[in-house]
Image (cartoon, rainbow, N blue to C red; front, side):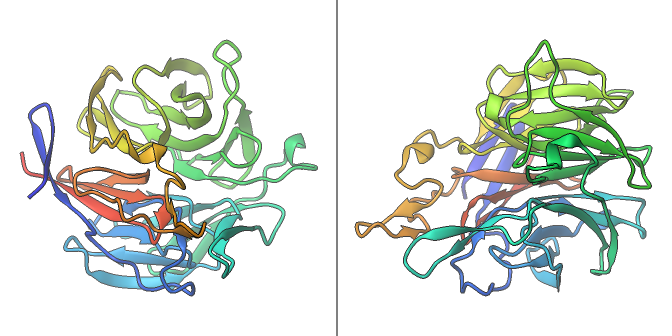
Length: 331
């Protein structure tokens, strides 16, 4: 059994923990999605290249699946009390699809992406409007993440569009827009937005991936701090106890302590991002394919992360066919 350690914590690596149902591309779909855990400890994620939400039990068995009509479920979040929870999905409106010639083309069926919520049995609930902002008069809105604050306000990261972060009211009205703290610099691909509850007052963490850092705000949008030491490509976040777990696209999960100092790296594969065709591989005849070099205990391209109530981590990766790994907390 492969184990990973972070201080006194020991995690058992459970590779290929769950497998979403086949998509229309017969396994060639490029996974680029998120993951979340419900109040009753089901794990919610998405098809690789398809349009269906997939719900798994704690043993990795598929217990439900339903279509969304979305282009891509890039990142997701769950809000509301048990029994009334909703799944929020950020759809950038763009994805890579196989072209039948050993390569992938960009598919963008609409000008703008969207943020939509569903009940946990698949019924569409709400959809946020495209932000009423001058940036979208001639350029696309391509949201990559969504988070819901305790007051019901909804935060959206436009990571693949205009590198802005928006706050909407619970009713869906745009309230404010952040472009990055003036003293710290503009966002460059704010890929994820996360409501952190480790302190007495919630804070808003933005994964400013293109700048290899986090920017931190209060829920009124006032800038608080940046965290950059020890980070390379923050893409998604979750917490357990006083630790912040960050899925970093460049082949690792980074763990920060209560002071946002690096405590350790989990599953770091320094060689993976240097591979030709990463996060995938390229054959001798120049076809893009799923890599054979995926290693137990080492990540290739973590894109989404979630934690359950016992502190187990679920990591989904960005590559053809996807990979879902469970890090089971053994101590």
